[in-house]
Image (cartoon, rainbow, N blue to C red):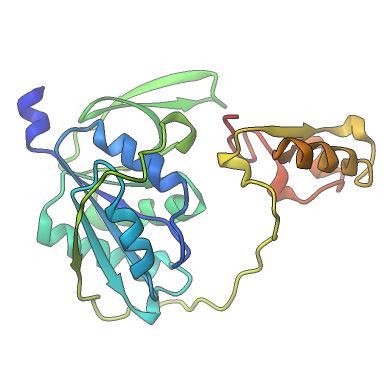
Length: 260
């Protein structure tokens, strides 16, 4: 197994907003380190030098690859995939991964399809470079999967791996030339819910409410408590279906996965 690990090389696709790294990328780097071998990170954006610098200090990252172009506005899978394929062609990775967020779930299946391999989604454990554990049947069964594809392509459940330390690393930076734009789709805009509370999926404390609160107004009780505890606020599916709160607060099988 140690001989196998020596020849591993993993590409982590970094998720960010051109200013800061999304926390799930740090959990994905921790997962990648368990594979053995060298870990590289790909940062693609419109002006992401700051993120690349941040990533170069993360422990366990050997190389940060940076691609900047206006076409990466909105991080469309149609535009990022050719860049990932070109990068893979150049460096010949054994593993390509991203966090199992909306970004990763949108991107990784397309990358796998273009490479003609089957992706492994939402892994919670790595037992060997080709053996992964993931949940099925709403988390009631743990499924151990042996992947015999030449290139292992997978998404990582962030809550199952510790975040990699953000200091102590000294990765080299390398600029990539972006491939020509595909032009299949265009990013117009996104409307984000703004909140001073922690993001639900990475929060250390979560205060959650259900149909027992009886109305959206009563959720204010939870908001006040959450603010005192520096916590995120979640909700059950019943509360969301009843219209008490927006669906981005839903926790569980059809919502967000939390690990407070």
